Length: 95
Image (cartoon, rainbow, N blue to C red; front, top):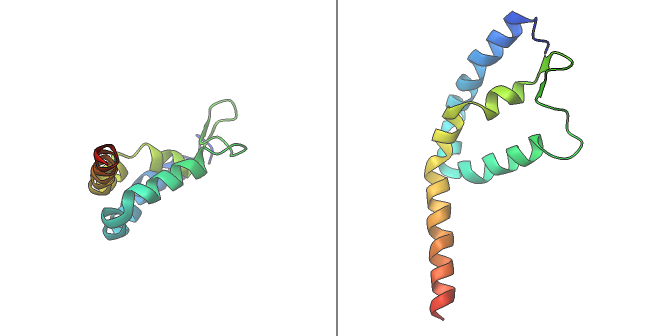
């Protein structure tokens, strides 16, 4: 989308949280792996930039990545993942 397309930008800003709310049960259960995979996809080599100031373009991915609601929904599984990986490292050291 171009920066000048105010209606499309406003619609994207409004619909991204609605889509996250619709996906919230899934994100609360398996959010951390999904979020990591999505960020790798968005920032992969050869991917178009999510914010291209030189060309005056912004991607919908920009609104998803910068939205704090996504981080909040993925927080429980992120904490659980850290806890399990820490417990696994402690068990390996004890052996």
